Structures are given as structure tokens and as C-alpha cells.
Amino acid sequence: MIHPGGPFWRNKDIGAWSIPKGEYDSRESAEAVARREFCEEIGIELTGTIFPLAEVRQRGGKVVTAFAVEMDVDARTTHSDTFEIEWPPHSGRSKQFPEVDRAEWFDLASAYEKINAAQRSLLEQLELICTEPRKS
Image (cartoon, rainbow, N blue to C red; front, side, top):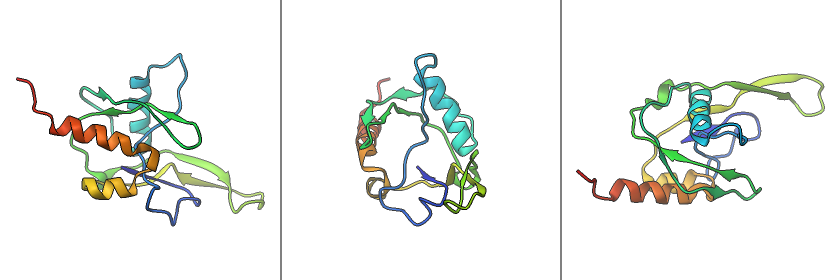
């Protein structure tokens, strides 16, 4: 999972973590955006077949379309794009921050605790996929 960068998230942990994601419109496929955002937010190209999960709606109304993929990722080597905001507020100065300040692997119990509450059902879906017997 990823932890958002920037000053607003600096001291937040429980409920602050997320999956890599980004906004898209009808001109782009959800899969193409997932691959792009994964690369932008953690600096690793998403390879392999991805499997769609059911959409979730976050508290603010944002709909998240998510995918699962099986691949090795060393969370210690991740890096993200940056964004710029006025910081400190009303200072007239701009400062750049990483979109994601860190990525980590968690056991399932910890992931349920740390992930944005609206995205917990994604973990449930992933847990089902991982525990279903594989078809030969």
C-alpha cells in the first residue's frame, strides 16, 4: 500500500494508506490509467495480467476502480512523482512534495487497519481471490 505525501498526511497513519490510483475520463481505459498511475506513484512499471476488482465509492464521492496483479515489488525502492502547493498556507511560497512518501507491505490485519476505510472492501476481494483454489 502507499502513504500519501505532503504536509496534510505527514502525521497520519491509521486510515491514511491507499492503493495507487488516479483520475481518468471516458477517453482512457481504467486499465491503462491503473498502469500509468502505478508507475507514477511508486516508480515501477506494472507488468503482467491485471484482474479487475469491484469499484468502491469513497466518502467524498470519488469512485475507485481497482485491479489486482501478482508481481514482486520491493517497497524500499519505490519513488513517486511530485506535486506543488503553496506551503505554508497563505505564505505565497510554493513547495514540492512527493505524491507518495512511502510504500509498504502489510499483513492482512494491519492492512485492514491502515487502509482508507472505503477501500477495505478491496482487501476483502483480494483475500477471496487469493484463497480460492486455482483452476488448472
